[in-house]
Amino acid sequence: MENDDPRHQGMRKKLVEGLRIKGIRDENVLSAIEKVPRHLFMESSFLNFAYKDQAFPIGSGQTISQPYTVAFQTQLLEVKKNDKILEVGTGSGYQAAVLLEMGARLYTIERQKDLFLKAQSFLPEIGYHPACFFGDGWLGLPGFAPFDKILVTAGAPSVPAALKEQLKTGGRLVIPVGNENRQEMIVIIRISENEFKSEKHGGFIFVPLLKGTVN
Ligand code: SAH
Image 1: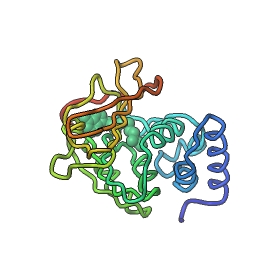
Image 2: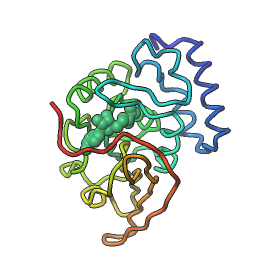
Image 3: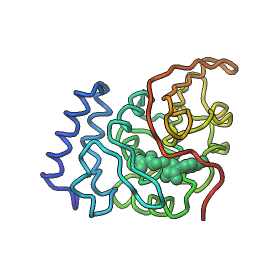
Image 4: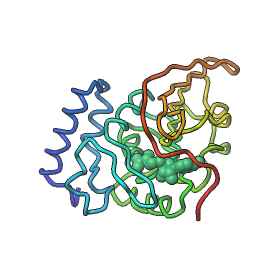
């Protein structure tokens, strides 16, 4: 790929070794992270930080999640090839690229127009083809539901009812839930039409899941 040289590839190998040491076990997640050129999702001034395990600003007051957080959420999602997945919070598009690299059929929604436009034009340029939507992820995408998996990449004060409704039976919703300072990573599994089970997976800090859209 243009703008992705052996130096970047070497940095990604090191990043992946670090994620392994921090406990990420899903080999499909690790190999996707090894393939996606994260540096291309950041401003060039941050190039030297692209493969540190840290979050970074992507403009419009938003951040590209820390690689460990991307890996952890993706691992909890238990992605299988051809899974139909909804991502809430497209942001830079990096998480979307990781899911596509794993063979997902991806729908991704972003509430900030500038970020939506940027991701929608940039992702295909580097070979990733999600369906990008501008809208409020609190509502999900009822016209395209149900989904095998739903991933929320912003911290929610509570679990949006629409997202539970848009899950297939057997499907998984991964969502950080809490206040502005700390969210618990929750996995909700739809056991049957009316039954849900939930698991807790530790504390994280995300930018907030907000309502409405910004033009
Ligand atoms: N997945 C992104 C992480 C971006 S941070 C990445 O890989 O870069 C979270 C994103 O969620 C921000 O871009 C923010 O604008 C967006 N967001 C917050 N509330 C939202 C909502 N209700 N619907 C859709 N996107 C939302």
